[in-house]
Image (cartoon, rainbow, N blue to C red):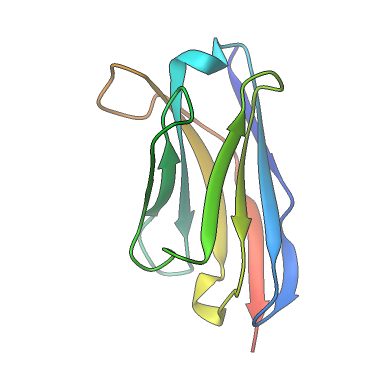
Length: 119
């Protein structure tokens, strides 16, 4: 079965950095667009970033543009998001998700990893 497993979350001070990883298994990883989403307490899940199946196209939410960088390693079946200059408002559970390259919705989701940014 398909599994997406996030890691790399934790507690960091404002202005600090974290790199999240999402290891995928059970799917042809290189055929999937990968995305990162987040959900803060009391808020709806929101889009953070996505990267095309070949890794040549990326897209970011305005709130993270210039601070977060999404990347992927298809040889390792892993997608990353490098998060710099973190702010308290970045505190959330971060999820990775996979969408078939020709699809229109995300088919698979991870369990999430907590990111907490202290002020």
